[in-house]
Image (cartoon, rainbow, N blue to C red; front, side, top):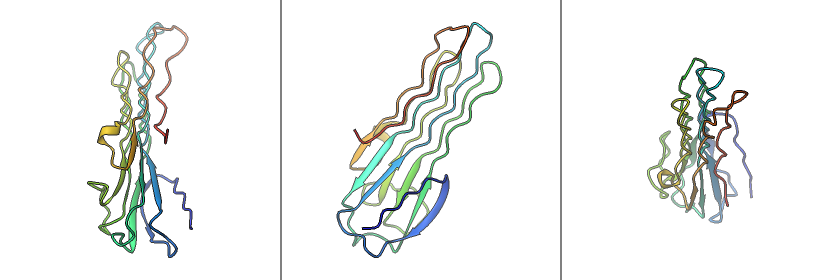
Length: 165
């Protein structure tokens, strides 16, 4: 069976492999959110949320289009000004059934993993990509960004991406 890893961000397409079977697996991870920036030396910033994870198994090859489309979500941008907000990442998805470059709406069309949220300010970390908003036979949330600890010498880290466990 063919194994294809797609790691470059952005949208593209892929011809259906000739040896694909009904025991296939598609996995996607949403882009992580960007962190906030602090306002002063004694006000550290919060981290962005990690991207969610979704896995779709045993997709019916009879429903699969000859070309499937996908998008690998980019990570969010960290803030650069005092008490600035980080931006959210972008969702990652694969559209297997419709032959169109649109995110799937259900497991009958593909898999989708939600992006992590950007930290909105120094007091609130970014939320992890929500499993409940993902599409797949397995969905897991990304971790929340680290909280502000008022550390004069550093800021908190970003949340970890969701994974298969």
